[in-house]
Amino acid sequence: MATHLVTGAGSGIGAALAERLTARGDDLWLLVRDAGRAAQLRERFPAAQTLVGDLADPSRLSWAFSHQSLPSRLDSLIHVAGVVELGAVADTPVATWQHQLNVNAVAPAELTRLLLPALRVSRGHVIFVNSGAGLRVSPEWGSYAASKFAVRAIADALREEERRSGVRVTTVYPGRTATPMQEKVHQQEGADYDAAKWIRPDSVATTILAALDLPRDADLTELTVRPGV
Image (tube, rainbow, N blue to C red; front, side, top):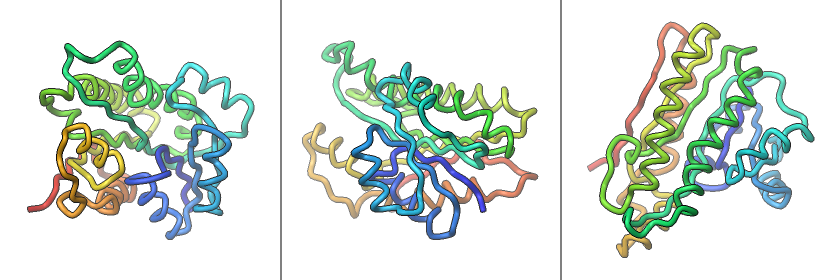
């Protein structure tokens, strides 16, 4: 039985993944931003354990974890949580840049740093659920894409740094996926939202599981998932 820690399990891809991991009997830890959110997720995933830490304030994660019990070993750490705000560079204030960089890039880096000892014990796997915006940038997507390009750099560096420890690192780049975040993006774009046009969260979860379950003789470093025709 494997042990996984997932961020962003409250909705979308994270929720679909948590459901799949629970269904196959794996042990699940869920990172949540506060005690109220922890209670909500424990109702949805009764067998899961929760760890409280606010990704919007990565400098306090170490302090928050010092007051909680952490898993002694982890087979995977899966970064799904993220935020998005669209806008032209000319119109994007510092606070918006900082918030996206904190949640999408700095917090995953810090969370990985704090949990690497547990991952090294089991020669575990770190998975970063990135975005198509981590590969190319469109107008109005500058600040979000910058945070996702940063995630790509973190993953690439970590992969080489932890190769000797046996920790594997995979980046998944989903295209537009039918999640609450995608609905928000459509609102910001002023476009009608039709979930049927986009990737189902469970399909992205299937991709993540494929990387997790790959035998040790191979390594999936990057996976790109796009909506079907």
